[in-house]
Image (cartoon, rainbow, N blue to C red; front, side, top):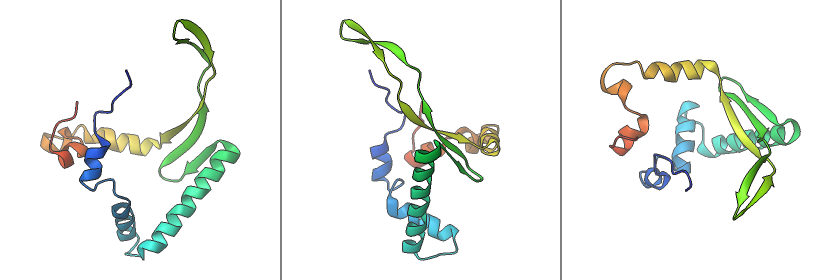
Length: 130
């Protein structure tokens, strides 16, 4: 059976959390309320830059965030019906966050009470995720 994530993306979309306009509005607020169209143009330029770097070098550094890399999976033997086949590994996109981010988010678990215990998605959805 395929893996089902613990959170339903359709449910978050209905609440407007994954809305593209919301993302650009929040990004505009972080940049001193620059025109949302300007912010969108800048962001799409960043996406084009990351895509070009991944195509050319297979790795792209996002300062203060982490690194994105195209990693080739191992070749393996798998089942295709009743027969075993040699499956060639595919390239997958991986994100390696900076250590400072890992430390920050792992320290959130150590907080006492309700703030440290709940996943932010749990607060928005109003239910506990397993």
